Amino acid sequence: MSEIESLLKSGQTSLNLGNPKDALGFYEKVLDQDPTNLEALLKKGNIFGKFGKFEDAIICYDGVLSQEKENILALLNKGLCYHKIEQYNPAIECFDLVLKVKPDSKTGMYNMASSLIKSGKLTEGLELLSQLITLDAAYKEQAKCDIDFIDIKNLNEFKAVTI
Image (cartoon, rainbow, N blue to C red; front, side, top):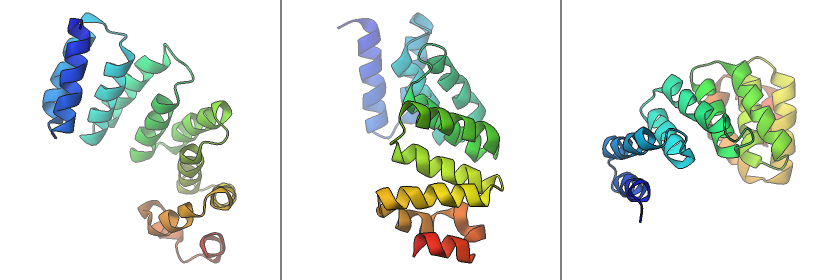
């Protein structure tokens, strides 16, 4: 096993044991040796996201996307980071790319609907949410409990989609 493989394994073990700070150290050591290591960039971005360091996470995901423009996981996570910092248009752009690469991505559809609604594009967001619920009824319950939809929960349009 190479040193990088060993460091990646140690990072994952640390994550599994609930030690994200230790894991971050392992992933940074990987990136010191191989700044383009996709796994380390993705994991580092995920850890930054958990710590609420969304701008730092976006930088990591950009590192992945500079190598693999259609990396679904990096696009989804980057979009979620933008959503968390209330930059809905860049989030929508990320989710739009996800859906161009993988039109049946339920996660992409849900997150796109959420960002559309939060950006004020209520009709467009509810139409997409309705399409998703038609594909997978489980998203109906998720939407009813999602804090992103709290402001529209009592609107008849939202109720019509989630009943």
